Image 1 (cartoon, helix red, strand yellow):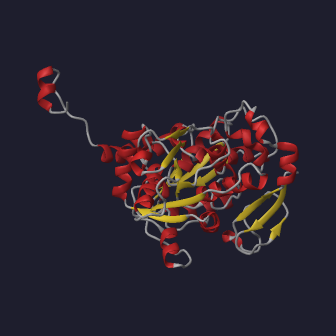
Image 2 (cartoon, one colour):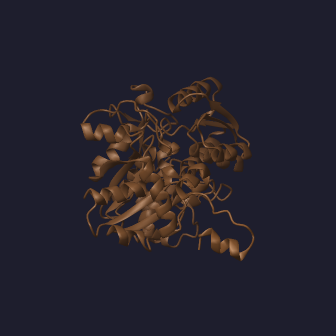
Image 3 (cartoon, helix red, strand yellow):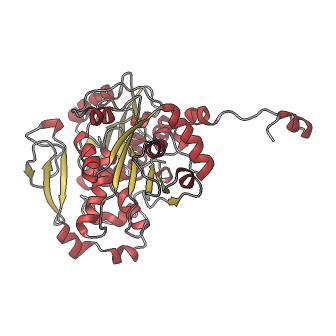
Length: 409
């Protein structure tokens, strides 16, 4: 592919030619790779701000020149991306900042993970695989199954037993073979890896496969384009495995290298206090160590992140910050975001917004600064916790007298 120069390893820095590979041959499984794009070639032959302004493909495939894929007609695939970026009507004013909300819960399977899965399925089809597999706490799994079903590719999905029913229901509807692993996310990942190695399926695990980050970065490309190439001072992202925040940085870095934007926004990485290995490592100035997975935000309940280098780089290279919020704060912001902005996010989906509120309170984000918060998944993914946040409806007999007596009005 002429638009790709090769790889570099995030561990040893080795430069490798571009072939279809997963990790660094020198560093093994921990040697996660960066794909190096030829920005001069892309800018000259493939992509321009003017071309994007005239592009009628309102999906992430408008950025195919920045993906590790052969050029093709992507219209048969699910329409992933180009989700709305809402200027806040109320919440930003309450916080004293200029706030935008990127609602990625409106993707086809209702999460940002469709961006990674769309690229993974496209690559699997390109290479002739008939089966794709991954481990996931839920969203990556359902997005993989849905995008694969659209293109006639079979899926084998490994989820921890705690995965929410809404996400498991999606998997079953999409026809995936679902393995409910009686263990934590690490055990789930390990079993999926062993099975993928044995049976030769295409590997969609984001912590291993370097192309997944290149799908996730399209959320940053969209944010920049939707803001007329003037990104906000900050972009906030919830963090589990580290792949999404790594992709967000990659997207802004691509645009900076192409000359489309003049600066990379500061990136705020947000975790739950019940599972925050990145925040703990940053606070204590040390390497990551395994953490407990004690949070209701299941999509970011990852005690052993598989992509730490890209996540840490996203925050450090952008001059950003790490912050953790409690599950109680997450539930409170589920209500707040719904009632002030009409955006219904799952716990992990609103964690970034909870982090923004906390960062404002701590003085990390200054009054008057501009912030984009990424809502990564729909609240319909986790109705149980949505009801925990919002409460139950008021029972009432079918009469006006009973309605008035109920006290709801």
